[in-house]
Every structure is written in structure tokens, then in C-alpha cells.
Image 1 (cartoon, rainbow, N blue to C red):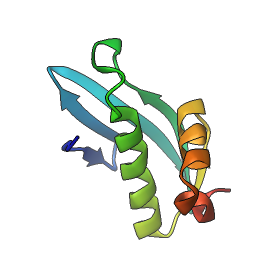
Image 2: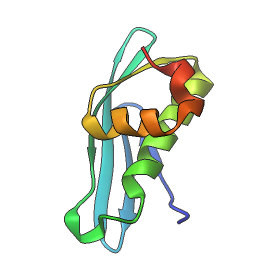
Image 3: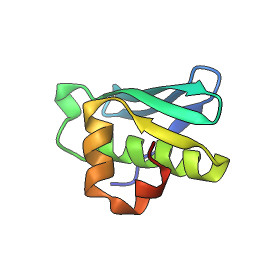
Image 4: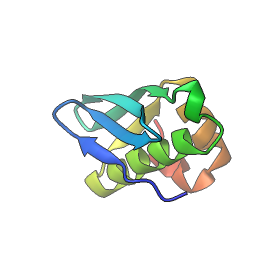
Length: 91
């Protein structure tokens, strides 16, 4: 699936629209750390890998910015466990 994911650094949010529904990832910054607090995908568009794409976008952003990542929400923590290529980012 090819999604357009928008990042709003001011709101600390990654979001995408699919079939009229919005999915989002919310994070906080603590110095050089990105804390992923929430990944939400409406049930109507669930099961399509959208949450994974949001987490991947956030992790790729963190890598590019030199940030450490704390996957505080359960989905982001599970994603990092399934994708060891991001293990070096995790605090």
C-alpha cells in the first residue's frame, strides 16, 4: 500500500487519510528523544498495514533527525520488535 503520510512537527503528529478516515500517530519530544504515545487507526480501515506505515514514517523521521525512540504505545513497541532494523534507535 502506498500512503501519503503527512507530518506536522508542531502538533507532533503523523497522519494519513484512507477512504475518508484519518489514522494517526502521536508523539512527544524530550530533548533528543521521540516518545511514540499513540497509534490509532479507525476500525473501518484496519487490517491494511496503515499503523505499520505510520510507525515506519515516524522511525524513519527519527533516524534522519538523529533522535532516540521510546515506543510507549503497544503497537509501536510490537512494530520495533518485528523490525530489528530499527532496534538501534530504541531507548
